[in-house]
Length: 78
Image 1 (cartoon, rainbow, N blue to C red):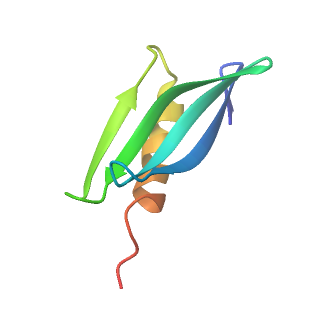
Image 2: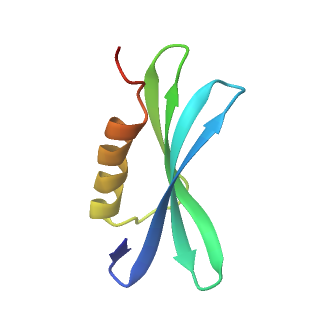
């Protein structure tokens, strides 16, 4: 995703300890990749948490991260 001459990528990851799924937001800076934010879904209490590791992220990128997290992180209901 390219916004304001900055390039971003999304990555789904999981942690076994604690038991959670994450949607990470990475900024591509030349040959480097820097994680700038993430949304985590904790299986234990079924909560979601947003963490930003850098300031001044484009709003539309954060908005897309949150929207994708709502769709991809919670478990599918049976």
